[in-house]
Amino acid sequence: EVLLLESGGGMVQPGGSVRLSCAASGFTVSKKTLIWVRQAPGKGLEWVTVIQNGGRTYHGDSMKDRLTTFIDNSKNTLYLHMSSLRAEDSAVYYCATSILTDYYDYWGQGTLVTVSS
Amino acid sequence: IQLTQSPSFLSASIGDRVTISCRASQGISTYLAWFQQKPGKAPKLLIYAASTLQSGVPSRFSGSGFGTEFTLTISTLQPEDFGSYYCQQLMSYPLTFGGGTKVEIK
Image (tube, rainbow over all chains, first blue to last red; front, side):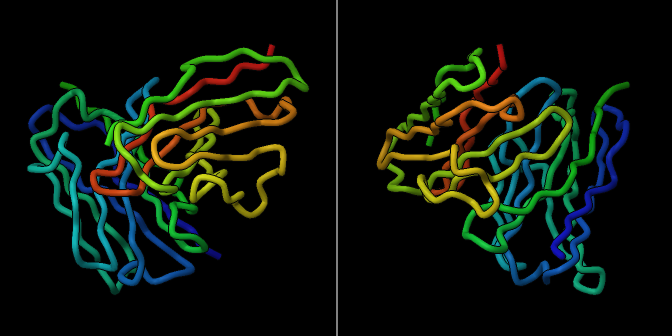
């Protein structure tokens, strides 16, 4: 069974950093394309970044100089490290992947990051 | 590529036919998906490649369009169809979502 489980969210001070995890089961993370999508409270969906087959990455403009994505193959887990966080980065962060289609058909439950002093 | 959804909110009765529009700022062929999202839940893929119904999704949902104009239709609105609906383009990075349409059941 394909599952994605995000963790690592919580309260972070402005200017701080956080590392989110997306633990996968039922497939090999390094062989699939995964994305991170965020949703600020009461707002719509915003694409954050993609990592393709464990290699090439693309970042959205809103966070592109403040992101690092990497995979720990031993844990089959994708990580998203975000730095210089601002209040407007407060959101639920979802990871998602495409398994049965070329579209994002599997999503985690999300993890909430709140940037506040 | 910007995606403009309309309307942003709609209220409809059970059994109504509902149509949501998604317009792309440039041609995206059929690289478009539709998602449904319930409060506090992750998005759920409904339609991909503009018109292909995702496995397990009721047949009352359908999608159409090509290029810059796309439509999601719910043929007969059911109580469980409340929530927000988003289109997403996968033509090029950065991937983008439409602003969303909130569907309320009257």
